[in-house]
Amino acid sequence: MIEKNLTIEKNLTMAQQVARAVSKFQEQRTGHAPRAVTVVLSEGTLVVTLHGALTPAELALAIKPEGAMQVQEFHRKLFASSIESLREQIKRITGVDVREAAAEVETATGTVVHAFTSGTMVQVFLLSEIVPDAVWHATTTSEQE
Image (cartoon, rainbow, N blue to C red; front, side, top):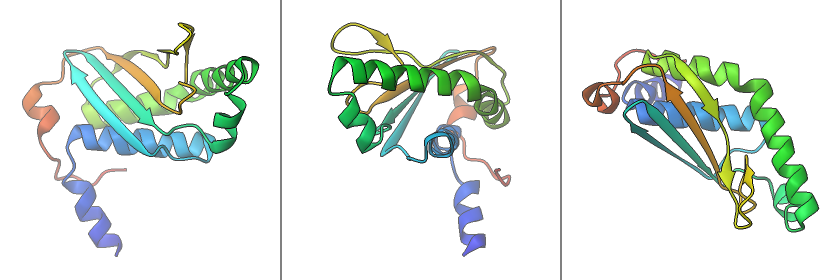
């Protein structure tokens, strides 16, 4: 079974590797894995969207404005205090340093926050160099993690 998992890891694109790393990162930080992760690279900007990233308790708390602010602040602080390890993972996968990292989104009220109250989260990483398109879409043959 372990060999099968390693084979699957070897055949992932960079986008898939980043999605997997971000999903694991989110689950380790919060105990809740996102339902899905979308990764898009344009020039030197890497955008990661976590769908279903909030726990049911956070969603319930976020129904009221005061609760939404608490959830947003919690995720903002959590991201800020633990981003270095994710930056390292992204560098390992892409071979490029992460110059800047932010986890901010706009909710229906127009407030800039870390998490949508719907449970969707967007993370944006500005890379220090452009990752060639052919490299981004290629699968890897080396063992990951």
